[in-house]
Length: 466
Image 1 (spheres, rainbow, N blue to C red):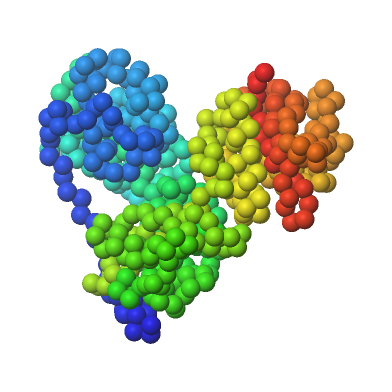
Image 2 (cartoon, rainbow, N blue to C red):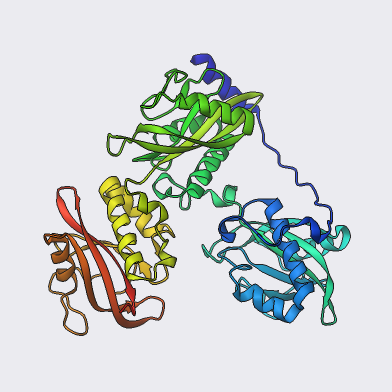
């Protein structure tokens, strides 16, 4: 074990990771799949090959319908715009033609070929050079992310378009924000308490890998004990791939895990070693003890091979499958539109609070699954105090006698539903809609959950719901 740790420390101290971006040759559009631009949500696109496919198919769309119709589609059709994924075009002088992201507009204060990012890079000049000289290629720079509102590293693919935009020659492009780059791995954005989806766990592990390569041996202690890397049922583990010893693990550190099996007899650690050896990264499905509940539950772990100075390590983290299988298909906050979807949304939030306790609060207040626009989760305790509430509007309305514009008892009604025999139900009242800034009728669904020995009300609502 000592040799393993020494070998690991030496490896980190002397190793450096280098990424080489290769230019992508110009290919005929027939080489791209424009029937299915991406698999899953377009906004989750993170692969350069998929980005090339997306931009090339947009180029074909311009050729098929012309710039006027194509621009309208790029701005409004979810096939072409989703979250942080959108199309833009500049002319060959570096001036903006359009941007579907909404952060820039032709002729605004930032519309200049000499525009620089916060690192001083003239990214538009690089786009003009790359597309003009090579026909197409990648440009990496920092830019505002319309989803997070932050300036983040961005990888854009640009292509010189044959179809002129009026009298101007055009360069068409789009880009994604890498989920695991130094500028996107800050503790404010990536931490154990915010891991909820498969995308989250992959970014979490990739950022842990970056932490190892940047900080070396000193990072081992933090990965095993710092609240950023371990929170309840979410934690980082690190195994020596040759010996299968646990170098970092909350309960099994220092042990040989090679013969570890789950309740079905499956040697899941051996499976992790096989996946990382032959495929580099992947998922393992097995049963394991949930540290938050003490029960053995189905678990999905994402693992990556970390190669440092010729030695291989297994780095991973996992998610426990929700007890209610319906929650696997739960709509995210932005997709909750009906009474039935609202019931499922709140019920799954209540299950998470029951399972994770107060560790769930970070997710409810910050994760896009649980909060977007006018849809969000709130939690009210027996004193009618909102212990989870993401808005500033009437944030001090923490009294059981508080009423809305119609005189309806707000928190008291919510508390009564949580304490009722059914323990769940609907309530209606007047409340400010954060999407409009106006007070409107809101219908909320509430579920009572036991938390730290008392019943709390977990709820969410929709405006204009009949």
